[in-house]
Length: 110
View 1 (tube, rainbow, N blue to C red):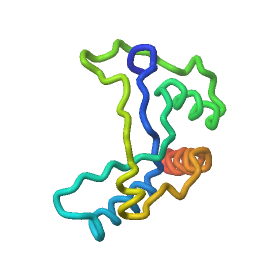
View 2: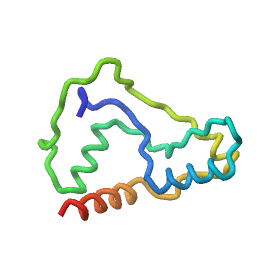
View 3: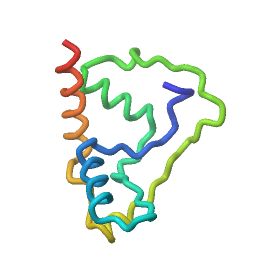
View 4: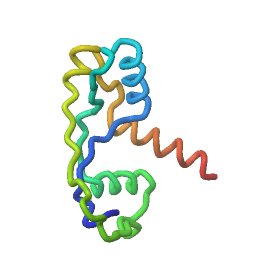
């Protein structure tokens, strides 16, 4: 984890992202920008702790490293445009999507 892990990101399930990209390609206006976000902003450290909990691993497994210079602390996203113009919203609940994602990776690491 970079630095103390306080950098915040908006976490989005891959299938929700794919649907958003498909809607933009099919129905978006050429030359327009559509931000895609789920509204699940949390710190990297909080996210890692959730993954460790799913894996039944102790937080001692977290390895901190020096943060890189100029690393953005937050990437806020306003996705009202894609919601209003293309009628897109995330369909997957964060917790279930994270469980699915971890299970997918675990099934491929055996």
